Length: 149
Image (cartoon, rainbow, N blue to C red):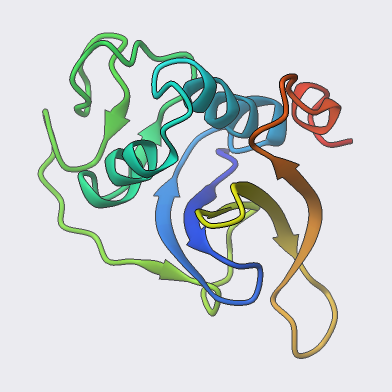
């Protein structure tokens, strides 16, 4: 069974994003988001979020993929999106009102941070922040490298 997540923009209270189907744990998807932000996208958050959220409708997996290749479903070692390659799906946005996701990674463009959210068991609240990742830090936070546990 896969561990699904969401890559999103906004705040912990109001966000919209796209599905990431497999391995959305902090040490997989969270670490990948950190690494591609620092590496492939050279800390250009706007460019990274445009690729992840605007140019593509959702992701099967971006983990361990070669970002020098054009994304597309079922393309060898390319980031696997749902809208290019063997698939051509038009998917809607996922919001804070949608449940059923194991992890949500919400990027705040202005504050240059990523909030890592988990489902909440408190009535009236769908999500809680389990970590705030500051994108301008030099080193990957232990939370992401150790899987958040």
